[in-house]
Image 1: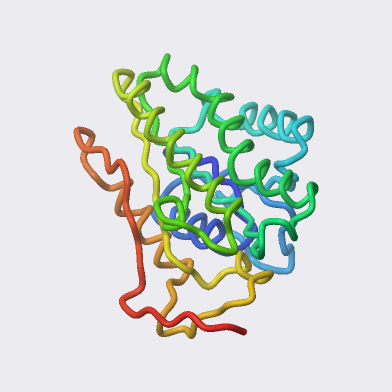
Image 2: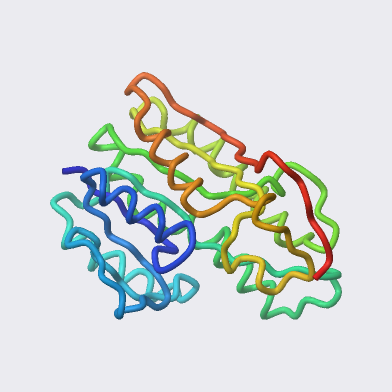
Length: 232
């Protein structure tokens, strides 16, 4: 049974992906801020509560997970955790910017670094980053958010070139607006007919993982067929 380490696993895309992969026979180790324990979770969905912006707590959680896995590193590492903060750049407080950078960029890099040497020694592994369509365009009212996602895409592309000789796959997904809590602080919205859903991204991750050993999907953009963004 292949193992998956997944961040952002308590809600949204992360939770949808965890449940999807559990159903496909993967053993999932999920990190989230707070899990709703009133829900019924599958037996092979191991949940770890942690604030990934707390570097000391994150290190301990990763060690706990590593100790429970059959190998020191997961077969598949999926970075789904993320936050979005929007508005004119000068309205963002230093604490907002720190949270944005630590969640969207610093934590994925730290977690990847923790397991990369084990993957290289094993000569196998697949790392999936959840970036955003904003990584490749201008982001008025979302300058810092777009910068973190562009940085994540750059890191992933460079990592693939570094690690491909060790048979490690690296994929970056660039979803458009998805019905999650990511946009709860935004002053815009889209109706359901013009949005993606967490299950759509989970389907995409399942597809990427199903590709043959000789194939790496380096970058994939997912967009709704319709485009209807409006002010709240």
